[in-house]
Length: 409
Ligand code: HEM
Figure 1: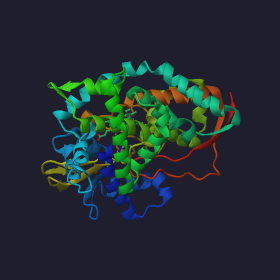
Figure 2: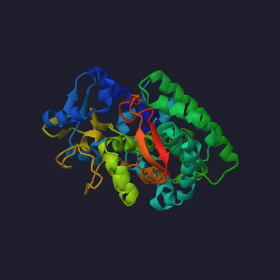
Figure 3: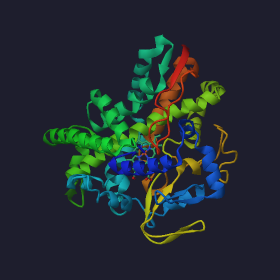
Figure 4: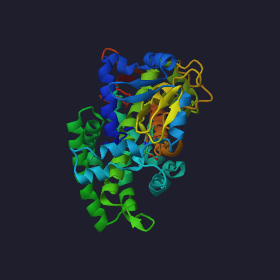
């Protein structure tokens, strides 16, 4: 979400949507931007969009360099502009600064506060609970012989898991869904409204936890200090919103996108059933081939050059992860979905200091979801009569619904 997203992300969304709109892309193209990316990698690998006044970067090497060089390509400066937005209150402008939108040295300090909760080791402890949630979701639909992978499984799973980690009632999850959708949507008013509602929601929870701490992430964040200072209320709020939104749209789409890939190659499901060690490899290939987060945003802090283009301080650069992950120079036969691909150095989780902190969580949730589905269900087939509808967002790739039929194993 990937905005990924707190509302800072939302600014990116609005910008990218405008880029897309200017090219009048049809729904089918939204789910298949890859031929266009290829053309851009070949002909305009560093392309200035006059209308939007930003640079879109399509090649793997250039994308990697941008995300690694945080001194030149700042995350914080993108959002500094947002802080001048007149529609926002003072407090909202303050809140635009979150982990995702912070540069060193503050970035590292903020990241340290939550890194412990997201290590592969901490996350592995969630295995029994994730397994239980997936089984419960399947129990609800297994007799029907059909399900919507999105609404029956891939949406509820990550939102339940992160809600439990944060310590917020999972029963409010329909509300979270509406908010997350609004935040990644291209409609600015809706997004601002949603982020206001989210903030007031989290304010209530934070007040409760201040009085009565529990064993959850929100209580930990309230108690934590950087150089003897507690996080401010706007900082706490943007942290909570980032974690809730970032983990949702993205993991939901990873699971959904996996089934879009399997729809093209159903035999992959049999291969994974026969050899479960293939499941993690398949997940990495889904991340590469249909990256849930297609675009990032950086602002140029000092004059620089990308490829043969000179770029000045203050300009906005959009590294296109979805294109980098299809770059033939890095991935031979890049348009082939190949679960045995090695190496597979995709950048679907970003790279460098902002590398997705939720990656171990997203991977384990997806692994457990696929493993249990393949164990309990056979003949899983997408209902092709129902047209795929892309999510309304330009930086998140996925579909709104994914109906499948199946038999009990
Ligand atoms: C950062 C993708 C799941 C929390 C990122 C970034 C990407 C990304 C590309 C880098 C952003 C940048 O460099 O500007 C994804 C994908 C996911 C996923 C594809 C699922 C398939 C999650 C989950 C969580 C999460 C489950 C947490 C619950 C975060 C946070 C950051 C981040 C907090 C900011 C890290 C930082 O700035 O240091 N994610 N993400 N993500 N992600 Fe994820």
